[in-house]
Length: 99
Length: 516
Image (cartoon, each protein chain N blue to C red):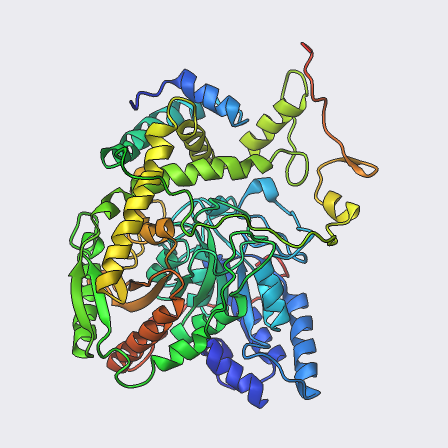
């Protein structure tokens, strides 16, 4: 189940929003196949009777008092933004030409 | 005046409290040391000389005015660059956050400041804490003070090297699969991963949220305990934070300095990671076995325990971690903070800018793990990979539960080998991943672990670390047993292991602030 193609890696990179060069694509395809083959051994012991653990120390419903607490100011929130306009984050067009 | 940089934090704190030494003197001594050796070691990404001296001056003034200060007041500390600091850049070792100054402090940093410690600067790390050698830092590797051609471990190689090179008596690290304990092992220092949820992660740039913990990096067990006491406790900004009251770790460490502290303690040697398997260096195994003998001679009841599922821990970890990391790192979207890069050609849309930014801003290991995580979470593969890894996690927790029925603490080597050479494993991701074979199980189960030096490997003269693990919430036990063992070892050696570290060449010129 560890056959991974370059097309598949390109699709994964698109999903993860990372442009990859052809050289990166080639090396990643080989490395991923090797890593996935190695880690696939988890399925040897992951039998249906074993419950999954998502969190080492289970907790449920962590609530706080429903009272207002100060958050970041607008200036603080925008302090690291690559671009801004007034009190807003400024971004390139969301929709491409085809939209 | 004797060299203040050679003192443990607790010894320095005593001199500060008695007025024998000022915080300005102590801080200046460490800044001078950084200026002298960090050109070679490269433990720091940023040095805040001026702010550190200002903080130290304020602490000295308050002490002179008769104010009652905390036990580590005035002691300098280095901070891993994964932790947000409002007055210093916080890059997590990545180009995508180059120069970013967060608008707030991580809770642990706020606690340091409230306890009047003196932040010296930010330490180097593998990018987003992905690595075991600090070679994956976008800002160049850190060098091991024991041998500058070797790795200092990772991801927190900068914090471990800073402490081992006497550039700081204390440092903060973060540990997702061993990033505090493995660097401690290969640099001859002490590092602790607390119980999951024991220390707040608010303001720690997230890698894998079900595994990450912040903890102390020091040159003695008592120092780690003192720092643990500063950062421990519930934080409403971290919803995984445990609400219980914690005992004083420093008191626990001091309890270990009493005679007979090890008498009757049940110590379990974890068979699967005790050094006999493939990948363990002979000198590591030898020092580990000698430590077992020392514990036995001191009255501990050493038994062997088996944890058969540990064999699957590394595999489970390299599914869970990438899956969580691929989700956490989605926040680097070129909109709210960090780098923005436009595509070289074609339409400039937000989506294409995001992809170009992440290509330019992320290094090879980060890309590798994000794509692996995206794969593990894909429809059709989720159950086979991520789902199975979560089941392995249950099995590992069961192994720990069974082992802790027979033993009060478990031990293993803290790392399978001593420090390897820079470049040796950088092109072999799988070989690199196996460096954390001994430390990963504790993260998967959420239990605390402590690494401390137990000697030098005969074949290469490099430090060997022991790992002690305790049940969840029993961090204090690590400090009692760790301090007791450290005392026995140092009595045998006649000195702390760190005093054997080779003398580093000192540069004769002072470096500029921030350029160290």
